[in-house]
Image 1 (spheres, rainbow, N blue to C red):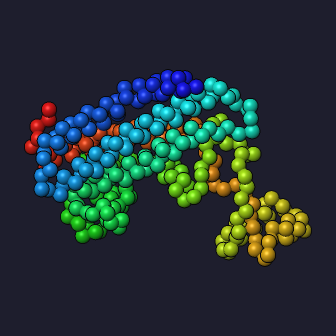
Image 2 (tube, rainbow, N blue to C red; image 1 turned 90 degrees about the horizontal axis):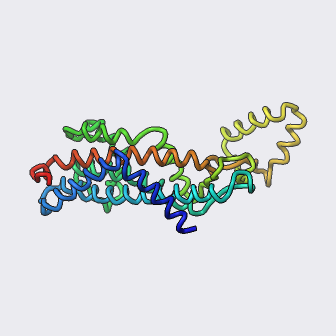
Image 3 (cartoon, rainbow, N blue to C red; image 1 turned 30 degrees about the horizontal axis):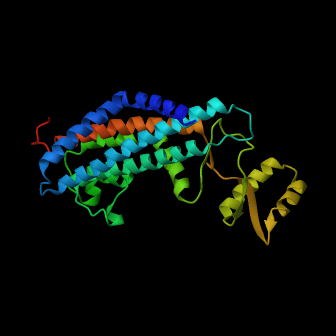
Length: 290
């Protein structure tokens, strides 16, 4: 098994590292590293941005590593286990590396934004309120006057950070939200079917939720007498319960893979270009490229 998966990993890794966005990222990262090491830690708070750049660089490499293993194990699974041969198709290795990818993609987007933010504003990363998210940084760069800030020449960075928005990143955020809030998204290798997953009993307390439930019940049971019988059976100790599948608890592997790959491509492009911008701004701009 290991040799087969390793061969698939090597193929996936080669596809990634030979791509245009990876080469852009790699060249920009190498240039930034060389200039930073020659700068000898100048007494300039803008150099904090380089600290964040190093973290982003490591995360990007970890994301690609996890993506390649995810793809390799997915390929191996589909070679060995065919569609419809069992009730559900979930693979531990695929889920593990998909989780790694997704949590790091979301973190990397925040860290790239913080790299840019550190260039414009000194902050203490040991204090949570000062360590902004991607959205928080974007709001301040787009509307500095709203926060009584004087920021100039941020558009080059903004153009790159704005690439890290859109439906793919929103789905990644949703997956990570479930992952870190005590729910485990389940990835089905051959897509989501109606019989996949257990139903959950949701207690309904708010008028809004009860009204929505009533409307759905009316649609399903137009007969009023029958509906009363069904509704009566949905109470436990005076509390109304709705039984249904948890939203977004099960994910289609092909969808997850598409979102991850799109986000990786955009992250590599935006990171590479942000590194290039940072490389030729003070305090690194006087260090000639080697």
